[in-house]
Length: 234
Image 1 (cartoon, rainbow, N blue to C red):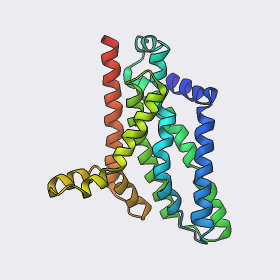
Image 2 (tube, helix red, strand yellow):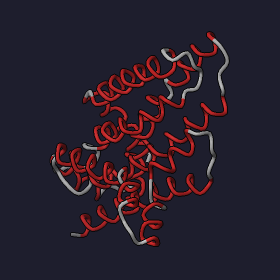
Image 3 (spheres, rainbow, N blue to C red):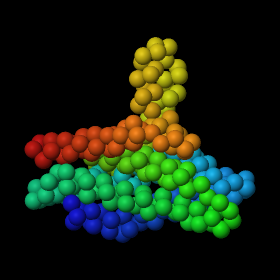
Image 4 (spheres, helix red, strand yellow):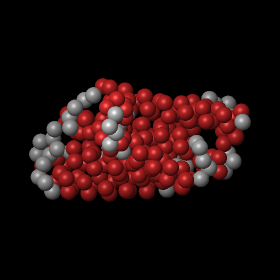
């Protein structure tokens, strides 16, 4: 797994994907920091995280679009699949490389916190709750994007499909509101990513939500392993 991880980290920077992702993330989070926190004269960083939910719907597919689709397009997937390395090692190596880059981007919040600490008091419990909320959300979304990347050899198709899939997950609350059947509505609400994420931004730590995000990440990584296993023997 370590070799795959290092290879993907290098590929992110060589291809320029890392620079584009980090630039856009920092630019938009910086804007929300200035407009929602500094501009309003507050020290609560929740507005940054609330607004960044929508942004990462579109940014994470940039991270994941090439992870497996490029292997298939360049015909290097069979060499990778027949190498003396387990499928879980391949998937997790790529997954953790993308997650590492996401953590690097998200950790800019601590720079913002330092600025706020200089200007006044920082509510660290709320900030850390928001930080980990986005981390858990990102871990789930990256797994979804990686799975979709395993289904196609076209990077743009992978990116667009991932954006649509993540956007549908975001709309689960809207779907639930428009369903008259109470049991179906509750079932869909229980699968909502946004409402679980917002709980953290409001300072509520929910262990079931943590389990939900991590379970989603595991489940979609498992699906990706199954796709590769089928391709290996197909």
